[in-house]
Image 1 (cartoon, rainbow, N blue to C red):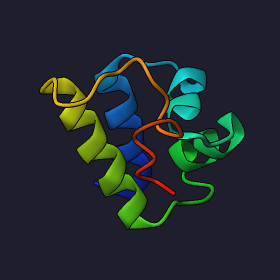
Image 2 (tube, helix red, strand yellow; image 1 turned 180 degrees about the vertical axis):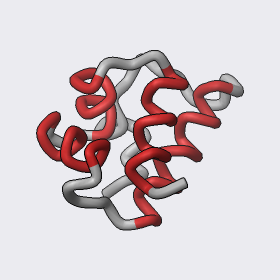
Image 3 (cartoon, rainbow, N blue to C red; image 1 turned 45 degrees about the vertical axis):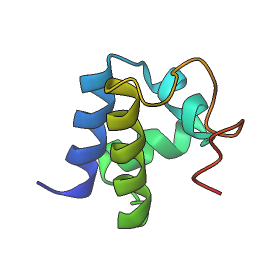
Length: 76
């Protein structure tokens, strides 16, 4: 599975729209669209961090209420 498929699968698994997913991680919607279409690609570490954050939210270890740029500024 290439990185564009991985990002799209992660977003769809969470049930978030492109705009909500991009807002959650502080990236422009257009950038996310380009990643999902394979036009450009984020660094692999960024995708791994997104997966980890979503896993933590899924397990209830962090709250989904706050954008990552808030208390959980892990991607900075």
